[in-house]
Length: 180
Image (cartoon, rainbow, N blue to C red; front, side, top):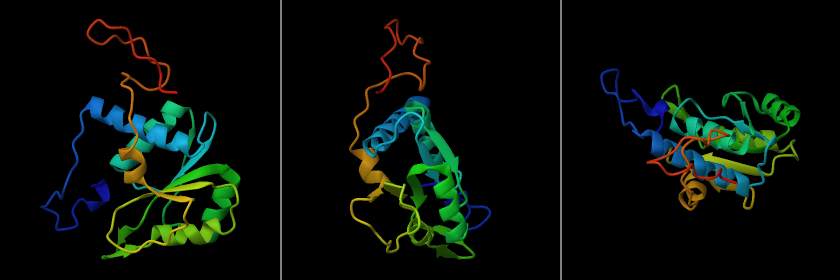
């Protein structure tokens, strides 16, 4: 569950929440990093992110730090022509998007809008879709991937911190080498 679900029932209902400790969050970031690396993301690659602020958005940021990739935040509600321009000029290789978002009481089909934008973008090789709403989603086999499928199948070697922060010992053991 993500932050945009907060308060859909009413202002007094906090809605469902996910709670992760630091180690679990870093593990999820490592899984996402391996998934993005499998889609061709390398150091310096751009990853376009259309997610609202929430757990998956933080995890994608950690994955980009792991890979030394550049996170390019984009608004999910931009018109397809503007989104296409931003995708082309950013040089994004991969896009992470929700399937849909809540808007004025009904879901807004973000993935469908992204697909219209991608019709004019040849540089994007992968789209990772985060499930938010139970609704049909347009799909391009080979390009589109479900977030949960990619991140659940990735095994991660434990490491204390992303980036070059590898000198923190754990229980007296030397730090674990960086995730490739």
